[in-house]
Image (cartoon, rainbow, N blue to C red; front, side, top):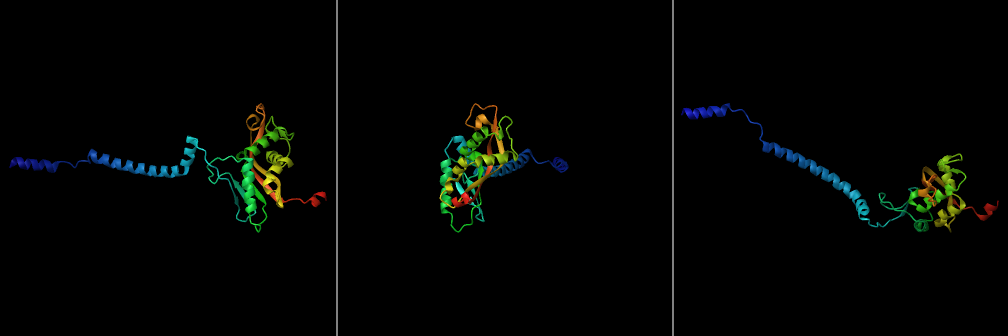
Length: 232
């Protein structure tokens, strides 16, 4: 009897014990699992956006480019996009430029407002434009290839626009519009980038000179000058 009473007294006097190691470990595991699933959800969303690009680069797959022209809401401007996916790099050849712009121009409604500007985007997206720009600057007296800057007033933007608007090259830009009352009247350039001529021009030996090779480009579109107007 006394033995049982002593046992009961010890039980009553025993302090409350903290949660066991198993309970703590279980709680920690649940928290880690929650963090893992949240991270996995973010990773899956990121992969959905970038996975095609990663796979294309890592596997070296040839991704079919899908160049297109997007008109503005008011119809007075248009944008050339090398691909419907802006994350993919798709160089645009001169033949592709002519075909895509020419097809869009022919299908454009005759009732549409007159086109005023045509945004090309970066010159480096058009390797033939970038190369011509570098070559033209390298031989131009208005460009200081040693210092990599324009000699004339207006700076690099004005000079790049002038080089690309010279008649011989402007006719290449104008090719998709030939046969219509409208054509390329000029070029506007902004945010010109300058780099080694040996990398961007046709002269690989021009290692100590610098030339413009990239810029944001707009084509200025307007009515062609009629022969009788040119004579006046």
